[in-house]
Image 1 (cartoon, rainbow, N blue to C red):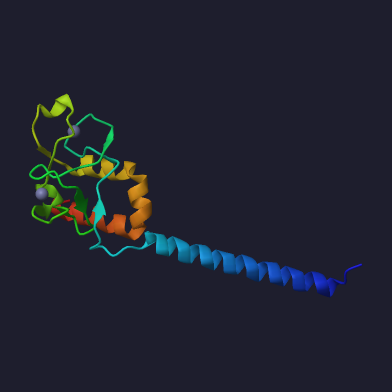
Image 2 (cartoon, rainbow, N blue to C red):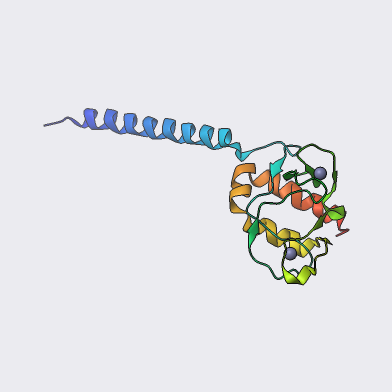
Length: 146
Ligand SMILES: [Zn+2]
Ligand SMILES: [Zn+2]
């Protein structure tokens, strides 16, 4: 029969193992990018059309209208294409998802459209982290004058 002391020691061991596992998990989450710098770029893939009032609810991989390169954004509210030949604030960027709503035209995003698209981009938010997303929303608020 095991003594109480043995149980106590075992409980402590399990406690420290769990603690260690928890710390390791936190480290892995951080390494997975849960706390990315605001200036870090993320590619816009699986991202809904943020154009004002566009009814499309499909996610797209976005490319630059001028050269077809992939597009990126950061939490400072900036957009760019992969060569950085074209860049600007999110408010100045235009979007065309191909939906009939656009009538072939590139349209600006509004705050509502962009924050909705962002709210659907679960993978992106997980990758960049909550602080990154919160800062992006603050920057959008500044750009759109709210
Ligand atoms: Zn470009
Ligand atoms: Zn659209």
